[in-house]
Every structure is written in structure tokens, then in C-alpha cells.
Image (cartoon, rainbow, N blue to C red):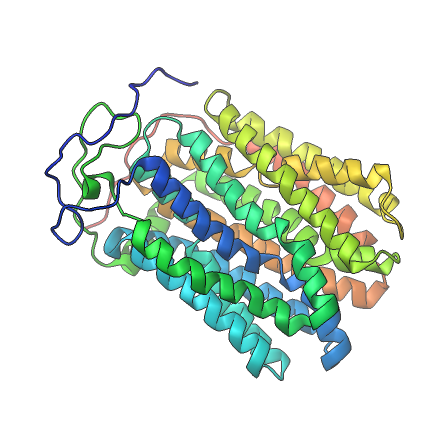
Length: 441
């Protein structure tokens, strides 16, 4: 439930110094930092769904099977997920600015190598799978959690929803443009376009992102008192592993990991990777399919922000159960809706799926915060790893099923059954107050 908290104020210590011991010149506020984080999330997000547009061109030009291309997509998703908890720990050690700027550099390099140097399927797994996966994983939802935890006390659910929506904007809204680029100039130009965006966004993120409100003499939004910047946490990789080992002793961690793995399977795994090829199988133009994915992205923004608002006020377990149940029903109807043309029932599916697609993120983060307290960002990073394992598994199996059966119908129905399972699991997560886990020496 929401509580009444004090209104945010401006600088509370005008003499506070910045990261390098100097008074900062930029008038940064919590909302400015959130906007900068949103820019990084939008830029990195553009890479996460582009692979779905590359399946057809890579198959046609290079003769690779869809299963082989799916391996590269699966590697990307697994690396993306595995990076998140370590990135959260690295942010505690070196700061968000260094990690986010470096991540944008990695996605740019990976995309350029994919477009200019790739000649074999294994290189797609390395350039797109590993390098782009590392960069997008470091600027994923764990990054949004870290920004929210440091800069906000009030409205955390709302801010989490807004930052998650920013990532969704990058993932979907640019798809029609990139699809048009693929059609007119080829898949290499489409891979280079977001790389250019990353090059442009990197310097701006470096200049305007700050690690903690104390760096600019402010207090977190909604906090009644000034919060000193905590000391850097050494041993980032070691800490990420230790947090995992402690969290893995608890039931809530495994329940959240299982539900989020199914979340990944039913979003990144099928929709982001296979919706456009499946629609094309039914005769739909690739640009039209990409436009439908973009429409999903638009409604994702509304659904995620609304979910964040609801998470501040309602039981997150019941929200998760409702989201998964409705998502499963939607996927179950999809084989009946795909045709060569875009018709109203398919548009209705797209709207419903968009509202539900990323709505699971705010309540999952809220449950991580309730159960794991200060370690919530790192724990959510590990939960997000399960998300990407589920996504990568279904991305590969979906392509293999299409090669074997000539249709994606079995994939949609099987994923709908997984969503029903996730709905039931969500209700079993305990809702007890946070108690610190015993730390190992």
C-alpha cells in the first residue's frame, strides 16, 4: 500500500562535492538522472528485438538454418541474463556511470562486427550473442532497479515502471523503422543504425548520469533526510555470487526465478524472436509484422507504468498471477488470428499482449525488495538471468520446432501452458517482511 511521504526537495547540502571532489555544475535532480537512465535503456533496448528481423535475411543470404540463427539469439539472451547480477554488483563497486557508458560501447562494437565482419554462424553467436548480450545485460532492468533504489524513496514502483517502459520503447518502437531499413538497405544497415545511436548516447550518459544523490548534494526523492553515499563495495563478482548463494537458500527466490523464466519464455523467447517470422509464414509482410510489434511496445509503456502504480497499492503476488493467466489466454488464441492481413482481432491481441508483456517486472522487483532488502538489485539480476534462460531456451526450441513441423502453432500453445503454471506459482510466494539474511564471512 502507498504511504504518505515527504515531498522531494532540492539541494540539502549546497557544499556537497561531486564524484571527483568538485562541486558539480549540472543541476541534476532525481528525475534528471532517471531520464538519463531511460536514454541508456532506450538505446540498449533497440538491440534486444532486432534479432527477430535478422532471421529471414540471414537465412536467405547466408543459407543458415533457423535453428543455427536461433543459437545466436539464445546465446544473446542467456548472456544478457547472466550479466545483470554482476553488472549490479559492478555498479556498487565502480558506479553506474562507468558501467552504463561501457555497456553502450560494447553493444556498438558487437553490432558493427556483426554487420561488417561476420561470415559464419558461430560469429553471430560471438558478436551478437556475447558482445551485444553483455552490453544489453548491463543496461537491463537491474540497472533500472539500482537507479530507483539509490535516487528514490517514494514512488519506487512508478519509477521502476517508467524505466522498464523506456527499455520497452527501445525494444519495439523502432522496429518498423529498422524493418524498413532491412527492406531497403539490407540487414547490415539495420545492425549499424542502433550502433550509431549507442555512440551518440554514450557521451550524454557519461555527462549527466550520477551514482548517488550525495554526489550532487541532494537527498533521494521522498527522503526526509540527507543520505550519505555508501563506500564502494569491493569484490563485485564475489559479492554477486555470495548474494546468489544466500538467496538460493530461500523458497521465494526459486519461485520468483521460475515465474520469471516463464515470463522470458513467453515474451523474448516467442514474441520478440518468432512473431515476425510466424506472421511472415502466413503471408504477412515483414514491415506489417514489425509494426504490430511496435504497437505492442506502445501499449507496453502504458501497461508497465500502470503496473508500477498498482504495485505501490496492491499485493504483487496477485498482480503477477493475473498477468500470467491473461497472457496465457492471449497466446492460446494467436494461432487462430495470424493471417496475411492485419485484422481487428489480431490488433486486439496486440493491444492486450502489450499491456501484459512487461507488466510483470514491477511486482517481481517489489517481491525481491520485500524479501532481500539491500541486496534486491543483485537478487533481481539473478532472477532476470532465469528470465533470459527461459527466453533463450524457447528462442532456440521455437526455431527448431518451425524447422521440424513447418509451423509455430505448437510453440504458442506450449507457451500458453507455461503461463498457466506461472500464474499458480505466483500465488505461492510468501509475503513476509524483509529480514536480513545471514551474511557469510
